[in-house]
Length: 202
Image 1 (cartoon, rainbow, N blue to C red):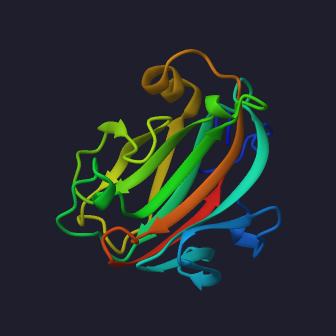
Image 2 (cartoon, rainbow, N blue to C red; image 1 turned 180 degrees about the vertical axis):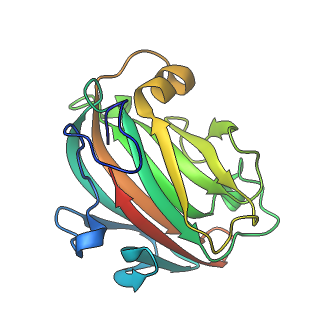
């Protein structure tokens, strides 16, 4: 997560590194399985050391609980690459709620657990970049397509989102803190196979 003035070429003083995969670290990250287990491992790629995810009819993610001050660092920046997208899925339905790559920003309601929300940035299989729709399993999570389709399969892409602005636009109201970041490659609903790579998350 980073401040507004940060460019991709350098880190500002206010940068917070959430996923420091490039130095071979998974400190602070935990795995959560929903159905079967997506395999996550640190590997060497042309970008350096990255986190590789291999899903075969599975849905499990890696997450890190960490309090993020969105007033100081409202923008999340990450890079990812996928080896394939999934065919013929209606992503607004439970049977089509599979993605080769996702990054969640989670906002906890504290003791009011029913107030927990999430922005779910996805590499959509076919919906237009910039489109958004409620998660098929819970309306408290909004899916936002930041990459889509096969045109950039096999290529590293760098993503940047202003989380505070997205929360205001897609969920409503102001938010000053995020409480967790998660990544997930999942293919359990469609019974498919997907491989993705995740670079550092700031």
